[in-house]
View 1 (cartoon, rainbow, N blue to C red):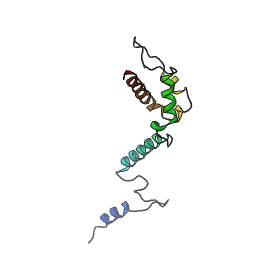
View 2: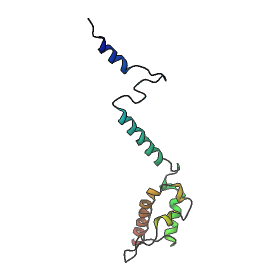
View 3: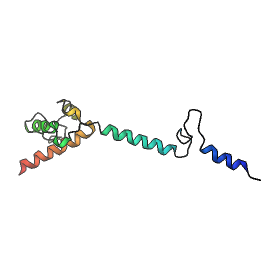
View 4: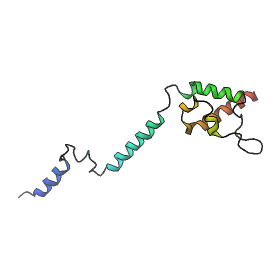
Length: 124
């Protein structure tokens, strides 16, 4: 005599719910946590792809920031001799609408790199 309970257990995993989705599709599997993590990762990556197709290194925003530093509109140093901040990052970021096309979270690093580039070219 066959044990029908085993067959029922196997078939329930592949069963289809009333809405037409299989149990695997509506989160009834043990891998449900992994599915959610993958979706979250995709959302994070999508947010970071919101920048324009023109990369920062080739952008008008970078050229304008470079020009602003050279002309003194943006301080060439982040801190003065006393260690006091020379300007708020948000104020510099809001200086031009072109900067807003790029992520604020990356702006500090980009500003710092430009300041370093300018400082290194002055030293030569």
